[in-house]
Length: 286
Image (tube, rainbow, N blue to C red):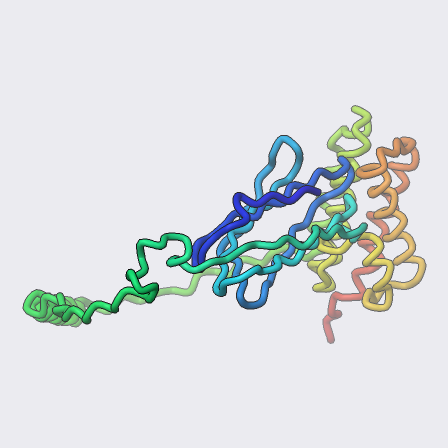
């Protein structure tokens, strides 16, 4: 991680550029923080872009007091490929000399060394065109009145409520997608990674739509840590986690699973959807 500033000498209110370049391994992700600074420092803007050396985060800083001001080092979070925290890097503190405008440009001072006198206030005339505004309001009022009178002369129209559309339940949607995945031919092509990516997405989507748990935004380890939240039995939850773990191995660890294992996971996924319907679906009372 390297830090660069465009200057070490500035005036009050003049922005400077504080650029942080981070080069990380291919299996890591960089997360820039929301850098909150205390007076006399202020973050005016922030942007991220990809550079030749890595990701570059550019902060625009403004100083509101004179003297030597210490800029605390910004902390950068490094995440694993599954968005879990790996480690943190913190830049060194940097010193900035901040002076007033008169110290930077002595011509703004009087011969005696004091500040130049403040000019008298200049009266400003209110520029609103009142005549145009009043005429526009009158025209709008006349137009609204004409529209209201015209609507009263029209016959009332009878509107019929549209027939409601009933969507399929989460179990029906999931089973249709699993059947489509079975017929997609991905296993015949040997595309194990794409097969497991779709299988994991279907099961997470089914859990989220049926249980209203944000399974699509949770990692496999987070689901494992929140086992009590899921109303599944231990065997059903173990099956769910085994399929997700196999998908993670195929997607991130580049593990090549056997075709019989892929077929077994697909069959287990269909059984899981059928067996867990009673966990969320209300039964009709006769």
